Length: 213
Image 1 (cartoon, rainbow, N blue to C red):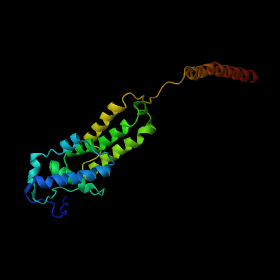
Image 2: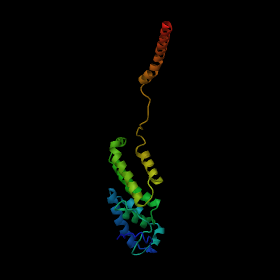
Image 3: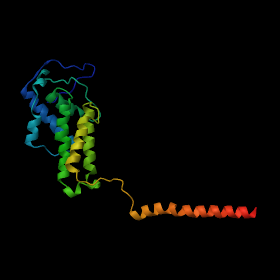
Image 4: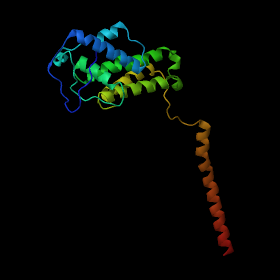
């Protein structure tokens, strides 16, 4: 079963090692809840195998049958504890590697599935993609907040650069363009025509003034 985090007053984990029998249900249960929370479709076997690789450095983070996180977990979401436990069990803490894995296999997976359901010609229509785009942004922000990693961060910025180069590189960008030639001609010729008219009026007014005096 997934063990809860210790109180923030203690903030430390007893030394020891986690058995393989304990890790499997911890990861399976926590990651399943994480996927349900993120609204993603179930990941395939290759993704599960990638996340199932446990770094050797994390084996010293737990003791016996009980695991205690050695870092403070965010409380902005009710599922933050599950996210933190995944990072604790797989990476030993809220590292950028863990954030990268979660963003890739949870946030990006959901976004890519949504984009795959559209024709590529519809990717450049904002009304078709704004919901998925917003969900991706919220997903990266929520996971970062749970792990207490500042958001936005270089990883999130690279993620959005990559999806723009992958999905939106052929979309026309709205840039400022010159007005039509007719409008340009009217704007230029109007003051030019007004100049001799104004000069004529001044000269006429001056002559009338001199004659009357």
